Image 1: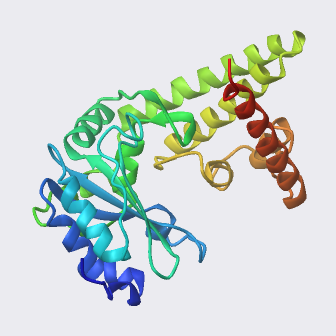
Image 2 (image 1 turned 180 degrees about the vertical axis):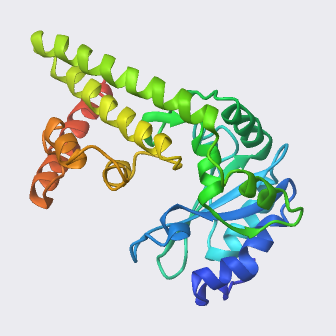
Length: 286
């Protein structure tokens, strides 16, 4: 394996000019996008580079591993379709020689197109997925591409789909807002019953689910794609016509977790200790 010098280039220039094209040349890969905060210019200096690797059939995992090793200068584990769950699918975490992180996220283009057809008909689903504590809402597939920057698209398929997704489907808007608001109300009612029984876990989960539902409802109402829970509350609060002090009220009912740096730091430390204690129990003999 030859040592790569590509990492010396600015990442945006490298992936836009050569890296994405190299990815698109891997067997099975249809095109590549830049997503996440960097595509929307809302990133921090330390934000990851999220590259959507759209494929059909089976992507060439060996070719992906060879390319990742060439770019990073070290072996990289490639996680094939399904390795990360049913929705996020698979991919790889690359650490560039300068320490920057680049994530390859596999996306089955046939499935993305199927979900898009369902969205246009007002149908969607919510699936369990690691990294999505309130579930993966299937319209996120459309939102990812709609908000992404297309870096490599030899066949033009990604660009065509992205253009279609510029307009939020009205059937989806009605179906998603209706279900989300109903589910939020039901979750709050369930939290009330759990509170009476002093069941703090169930009550907290129900309240968090209610807030997540409401952020989805507000985004859909404003015909705005919502991809995941990260930043969802602040984004919903900033939407035109959002309820007064929506963000503050939601934070208050969640107990103010994370409202200040010291509070969040204490909570994270306590959570890490709790995870470690439970891990020790389940990994113990017998």
